[in-house]
Amino acid sequence: MPMPPQYLLLPASRAFITFSLIAAFLLCLLPWGRLPGVPDFMALTLVFWHIHQPRLVGIGIAFLFGLLLDVHEAALLGQHALAYTLLSYGAMSLHRRVPWFDMPAQMLHVLPLFVGAQAVTLVVLLAVGSEFPGWTWFLEGIATTLLWPLADLMLLAPQRRAIDRDENRPI
Image (cartoon, rainbow, N blue to C red; front, side):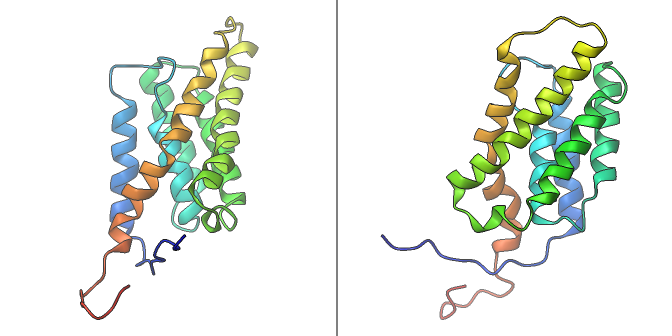
């Protein structure tokens, strides 16, 4: 079986990273709310950039977007901020390991991150007296993991293009 082509990636643009984070936040603002099985686009984008560009996207960015999401959803202030901060720390600790694996193995690496972030949010909710929402609560983490290949394709696309195309150069 032939190996897929390996790309030399261009440097990541700060403007594109900022745009992708704002777009993910806007997707989280859509009116479907926190229905079971709806992926967390903000968590997906944060984990992706923390794995691929840990020096450009810090944990403070995750905390800020978590606070903004808490305010938007009228949730307990700091609930998403805590989850996104721990999620980002976990992603940064895996940033040297994950890119070396093929896509199914990458998905297995990020699955515990997304489900763990859901568990942190659930623990915070239970600590303040909310009722257990059921095991469907964790469908969000699984759905977010299933979008990992699409995020890899879309968010690395600007870095894969050649600066000047040449028919004799395969990269």
